[in-house]
Image 1: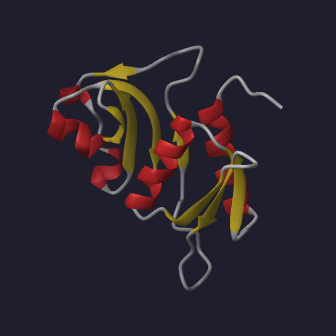
Image 2: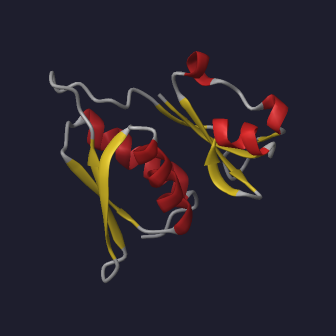
Length: 130
């Protein structure tokens, strides 16, 4: 089944799995999705992920607290296929005072907002994660 917006599909599957308190979720592999998942792992929003190259799927293990509360509280898609949002490196927003993470697609690759500010590159504002 093909989707017009693979990033929105990724965020929706993660949101649904978290609300149902699943241990993991399986998602089709693409370079963009893998970059976003890698950033989420580096920032501590997910526990781990495993890639199955034969089936072209990635299994994302979700992270919960000891009281079974999800670490990820909110996943918001900012730029959509119908309305792209671009920002310069000076206009990269700080989500919730720096608690959340902003993910951008830049000429330097898909990176989080802090790395984009350090490299002084702007780009397409993909999503917010809190």
